[in-house]
Image (cartoon, rainbow, N blue to C red; front, side, top):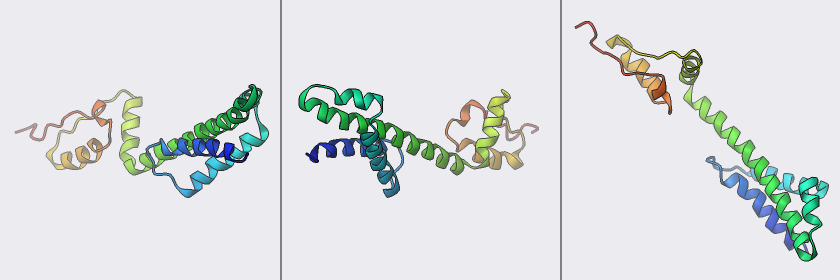
Length: 140
């Protein structure tokens, strides 16, 4: 009856496949270990599923353990994706966050720094709520 665990293991690994980051082998191992931990310890929702009648309870506890592992492994991978995305945005993301926190609009006025400031900030997704269009030739 080891085949019943395979469905729970696949479900645990599906949690990391649904996030926007390509999963690594380490994350698959983590999902598997979380599944085994939940399957062995059987915390509340898993122990309740095991008490279902007949073969349904035998399968349900593995599926609930796999679902719990999928949620945790998927959430950990999603937060890793947010961190990687944030580091890729660089210091521009910190400038935008500080402007949002203080309710400040960023407007460029000089043609010298227009390309530098606007290019670095407007390439970050969601920057349009803080950065307004610049006036390149304000004093001409």
